[in-house]
Image 1 (cartoon, helix red, strand yellow):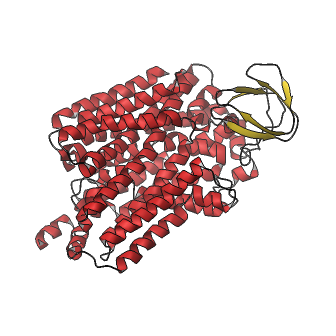
Image 2 (tube, helix red, strand yellow):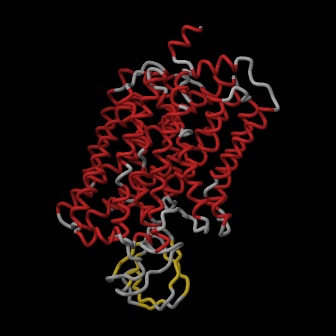
Image 3 (tube, helix red, strand yellow):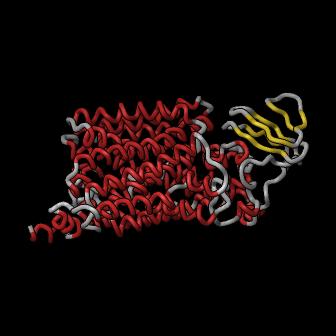
Length: 557
């Protein structure tokens, strides 16, 4: 399977090398001199947006949490409709190179620029760590290599590509990888549907709860897992003699293999089993809070509004020639993403039928790459596993390129402005730090961290951009206070939930999915503080520049 990844890595590095000749200025590095066409730009936006959470995570969440997880796909796509309507063209008209650039241009505040750069670093780390983590997990599953190998390979590939070619290289790599991911995701999905046969297809559409093992089933636990059994359960641990577990709670160590006898009851982990009534409910409740409607709304708020605040997506619109090009880019992106997001459901519902034990082992993030060999253990299964592995690695690389570029810009353009040489060195240093963070993060849920990044973006940059673009009265004090409140109320409580845990019930929802209340709080804070002050004298002129087409703005000047 490693041979499937090598061509993706080589093409990534070759395209990066071709960008060296065009690298002459900071504008070349960060926004490719604003010469990217809307079609190529939309493919690149789609390529970097379809991360590990999209290629692997949504299908894995369907297996683990149920069909309600498909709301993530709805939110991810709908975010670009909001981006198209509210942000894309005005952001491009500012002439900024980064989101912190926009903040200073709109309100004339160097303090706000530095705060925005720090928020970019927080979002970038929350989003980059799961990309590298998923790379390590997938490479380990398909090749048997240690977890750290995939993490280091992903970090080296994206950092060297950016150091060589900057945004121009990233754009063409991401556009190529979007086409690759689309083909390598859709073709295996169609093959799986045709290959499994009518009985499995019927079972996928009318799922039966996975409450007993149909055959003797080995479960290799990827994470430290606690589960409970309700009846005497025969099991063999690590190839040892069979023993019978009495009813109660047990803990399985990461890496251990437990073999459950045929006909025994499936242990309970968290919520209901795959295929059960809760699993089939078209609502989300990932923390088993008991409030699925509120949990679904919170995820939608985070994904839709968070998309508008993702720094690696926003910087992409600055590569357009003008505001009209940025708007066309967003419109084409909606269509491209809509096609891709039709297919995670195929992998999810088939995985719930064919590999439901992944729910127990903590390995649901790998269901996409494990399905082909489960359906066909011959050459076809091996080939499609290789293709999906290549597509998954393309997803890690494309998203990591955009994120690492945004982080590098925040460090060497906004926090500590320097030369082009320093800017090209920054991706290498930043990637090294993220690799060090990802190495001990193997047991963290990829989907949880990515959703956290969306929640932080929705609670910080979304209010800043929407109010900065559409409300003349926004002040420096209001923007800074609102962003601090949004950052603390989202990243802070998510950190508490991850490291300290949360009590069950509504508290688990409010801490684990804070966007439902942190976003309104950030908006309200910005408005309330701004109303007590006075906007900059140039606010009216700044608003005209944001909303007039470039030709009209030139006539007025």
